[in-house]
Image (cartoon, rainbow, N blue to C red; front, side, top):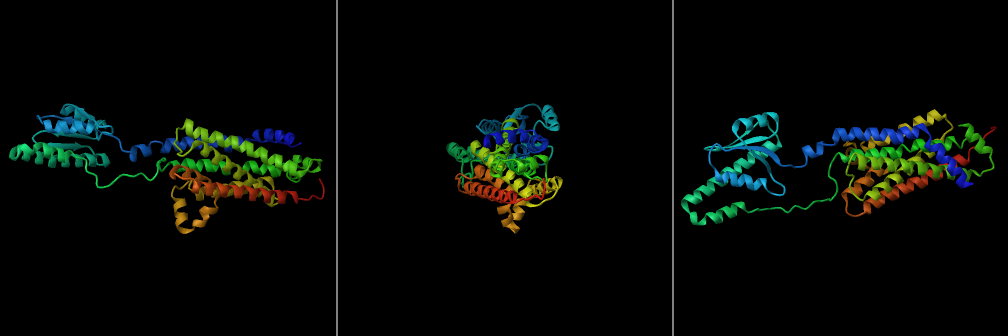
Length: 376
């Protein structure tokens, strides 16, 4: 009996237009928009890359060439150097192919087109080179025997601080939008959960009327409906995460299997939330849809889907809101997997989602089973 009901519940759920649009097509569209809008910002503005630089040798300066070759030949070179003539270098600067021109005349000069981080680095490089060149020339003139010691001292890599990364995960700030996108798809499972009540309440649909007069126990009917919606929602979550990771090439950080697990559990939370909303009041189906969508969008807004720093503002003012917001809890699971090396915080978030699922399911079943009808 249970498997029979589960089979037709799955077929009914997977054919529903709202599920196809909100849980499959809309996340693909919004994820693509996020990728186009934010995909290259982190790489271009945050991650360091070699600075394309033109070098014009108008005079013989072996020291400059050695220094430029040294900083251009490392595993992570400071400069991406092109030796050329002055006219070609100026054309490359105008077209944006290089960020600056180093000219080795009587005095080493730097020419840039505009200001920015890369131009400031080039300016610092030239200033430091000028100091080192002066020291080396003075040493060669006054104490040539110690020239090698001075050069070795200037070339030594002196570090006052030791670099120690706080996380091995993806530090791209814009990845939070994809976390919240997955959480949005999960909470939109409430639209799927609403159909459990619609299909099991006699005043909501003809199918609900038939089920209420059928000999099948309501516990079996509700259980099959819940499990069917869980499976359908899990399929949608797997499609969403797979599209983001393997098609959009977004690094979500952490163990990918746990990312899938978190998204599926979050989807089940969304289903049970919709199930509870549909069970609370005897209002029209359209009104329940409106309530479910409004609640889901409010949770998404407070989690930072539309304004990136809203979660931080809430954490500073009313931190308990983030602790009870289902969407924030779901997205925090991905944060914990990405940023932390242990699973303590992640486990707390997963337990919180499990508590929500059990609570919403229990309340929904109690409210649905207590429904009585004067006539059907």
